[in-house]
Image (cartoon, rainbow, N blue to C red; front, side, top):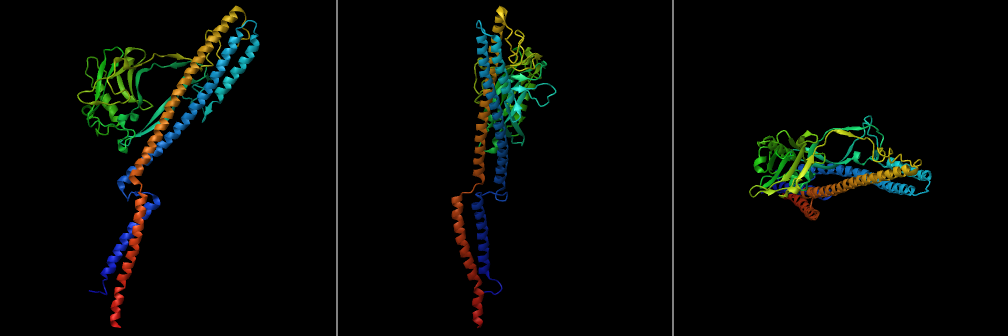
Length: 473
């Protein structure tokens, strides 16, 4: 039947053409953008996950930049220390020369003064991004001084959405060579602390590079995984066993397959608070994360007494459970593998640095040594004491260089890890949203052919009414 009012063939051809055009638009978009999910409308779930991972990568990129700046600051301080160490060795050689009979010590002092000036100039110029860790001013009036310089080292997003940053701390007080502050510093009593070996979210237990982004920064205790260790205060009579598994975590964790660091810490502290031994740990020690994100146990008491000393030791897993490592090992080690943190009593410390601290025996600092007036047997004795002082200072500067080297290694290692994690995130995004260009280009060619055929079919369908008109001629 042919109708002048309803052209069914044309309607069918038009519907087909519209469908082909819609598919052609989508395929063309995938080919041009390289993505099969470029908007939330394409796939809301995948788009949401990919957007979150991209946000994480942006934060990791900022962390990587921070690590780069931190590495530069450490390099600058280390190079300054290394140069000054060579100067100190030269200084020691000059002092040893001055011990020889008949040497004009006033002339040797001229050379020593030149070395002293060079060391001070090197320390003063060892500045990176406005930071100088060798020549400082720790006086209270200088509010910009920080005894510990923290470098952002890591970023973690928990399943709850909470974001945490881990830090690498550089103890400037331990490596400074010169300090404007001449007053003594009162040091407060400290608590006993014992630290894990690495950031909690960086341990394998908390899946830092898991293929599923939502798992990263969380631990799976839904099966037989277990953490078990004993905590003991210094007197040896106050001890308790902390055991974390699916049973003991059930009240603290909303999802046992994704236990966050906050829930993990809460479960530990809950067990400490519920300790019912004869001499319980409750109120005497607590678990937390330090600035580097490491699992830390800290005593409530401070000072050098037994209550300010805590020891941690792994114990055997219960039943068939598998022990997992959260920074304190995962086996059942010997007693010699126990880690102990001791508090310190209050006291005072000099505000000066390694090279400008006056030695009470020689009455000189390395910055003010003057041998020009040292004569006779007494002078030889004084000069020998000064050489000993220089030897001790060289050992301290060497130790400071070791600390900086360790910090540099830690920062470089973290940079490598962050870079690897960013690449893993990029792969995750690619799996979720990238288009298969070979497949899409082949599909594009097929759709273009279908489009041409559909246009021709529509033209043929529309010509049917013209054939009817010929009947009336």
